Length: 430
Image (cartoon, rainbow, N blue to C red):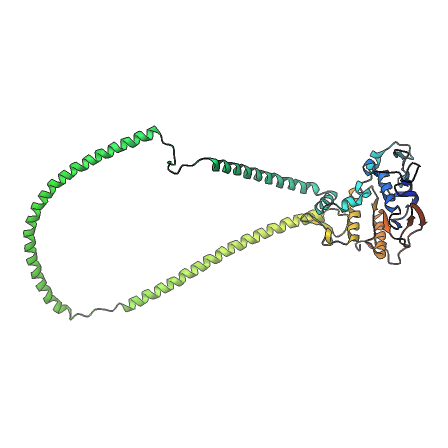
């Protein structure tokens, strides 16, 4: 069974003069009073007594007191925790005779139970990470985050090296008149040999020109001979022309066939082919669109599978409160992010998570419980009782909802909280 606080006695601590609180059997103990009367000092005394030096106030002893501070807490597991004397040294009394100290207290008391504002004031990501650690999936998500960081760092390293190389290249000189590759002696020799080869070719071409000159003289003689033959050909041409004139007179009487029908058919084939090509283009476009649609569907299915895995991971976890989950790194309660929750919902979520952090710790301290009205306060008390939790809280009020009223460091009134006239708490309604 989780450990709770049965009784609390505080003297001369901060603003407290002498306060004794009976907490056993009460799921919710509300310490009421006006501002500056010592309510928060009671919670600070509990935190210091059970949490150790990290919760020590800067000045433990009440300013007006000449007596040393004293704190005595009796826990439900039988331990008695005392801090008294000038240095407020810790003493843990075990009825069974076992010795123990701060290490024993730390084994069943979580620091968030003593300092719930530390959780309330943490970032949304820190709250989500705390919940993930509580429900046992934090290690897997942490592994994925480390893998993501490793890849990111690797990419960043490549980018940094690329920038360095680019900067180095920009600082190097550049000559527009230089060739793209270095010049070597071998290349110059090859170029010289190429020039000599071309000069040799030029000499060959000169010799060839001389030969062509001789050929031209011979061709001129042949031309004169051909001119005589041309005269004979011209006479033959005139004779043929006369024969052609006679033949044309007969040709005019011939009737040519029409190609209009064939041309019409050709035009129709072009139009048909245009339509065919258009249909082929449309079919290809539809095929491309369908392929992209299929790929989009595949990717959508992959996204749904990943989301299903995430949902299964969280649904299979033992969440500390119905309606509590984590999405995209944010803690949600009944679909609302932390900054959209009411103040009372934030306290419920925080209390449930703190309880889950160490199930052996059955209590938590809450300062400034004013954000809950009396009806919500009653529902909160019923929920705490159902969950087997104990909360000791402060509230700026002197109403009947308060378990004790503190005035000027003393308990002025102590009473059992009135029982709610509403039906008993039903799981899942809070």
